[in-house]
Length: 281
Image (cartoon, rainbow, N blue to C red; front, side, top):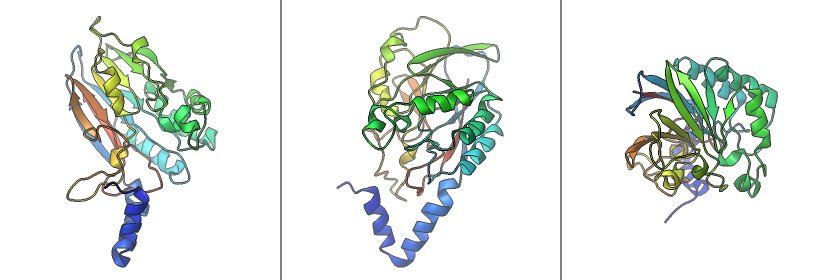
């Protein structure tokens, strides 16, 4: 039987001492207790190691403050990346204080080439049918002000450490905007590594027959609430529950899924927010 996030929290709160302790931990400590993780992936065609900072799911909202997001960005920069990828959900439902947000995000682009893709909360069919914007125009404007290159079913070439890379960003899967057929080849036609950005890791099913080396995704928040000891993640918003977080193999390629910076509803339990560094070699 699948329980809702609200029912799970209510069950904890129903035990007086445990409820108070768990509620305080989930709301006031873990959601902003960032963890920096480092992983390594070997892909073909690289001359030198490249450090990629992968951030996702800022979810700016009443539950996730700009002060916290700025702190996360500044901590990220201390990791000395060569390249920055942002994989969507910059907001939860609405965009407030665009100038303030742009100042924060521009700290990334001022120091490193920074690329982004759109998440389901950023606007589009899914968001418009829920509580958000029917288009992602406002988030697009935010990224433009921030000096960040948004790739919406688009590709870009970047040169890092004398190494040319192709970066491809897809539209959001839940909005039916991911169009790999207009960007990706089914067979390797060049020696440059192909790095794929798409918010939802379930996108792997529509890109698995195309040529790419590693895919960067967010969306899952790692489950956001993970039941201790048994590791169950009852609220994973993906079909394939095996792809919750981390660097995972897929069809001879790699998928990296970060737990993200922000959250929904201001809660995390046994699933800390994450600053991810992936070193390609």
